[in-house]
Image 1 (cartoon, rainbow, N blue to C red):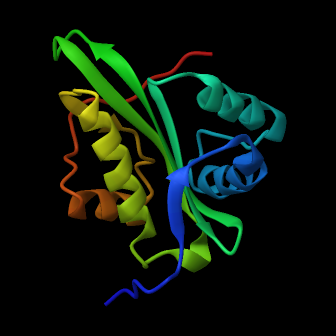
Image 2: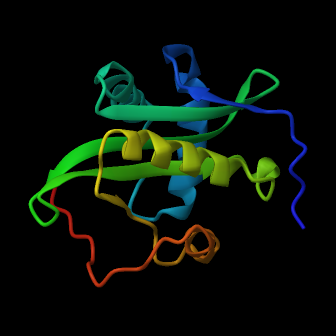
Length: 153
């Protein structure tokens, strides 16, 4: 049974959190083999997220003035849905703080943010080899689709 008595705070991210979030992205990218940490690039992306207005959301978990978790989301238009959807990215919790409900709390808050904006679907990508994350999403009622991700740079 996981412990849930960690005294943390979940809140909107601010610019002073960027270095802590970059460290977390390093943890995430060590699992997601499609990505490589480049602090300058990740800093630019996080600044864009924080400056991007009401269709972007970055939430962090903080413990003892350290960023221990994060999750981002952005609103997109889906022709399949005939409306707006939310793309959730960058859900990661510091290894030493996992199993305490922080990831669940971050994901539920991001989901609530998106639902309040009228989304008809939530979507995310996960590394196919990250079985721990895939099991977590399954417990959170996320379904695997037949779609595969493609990219071109």
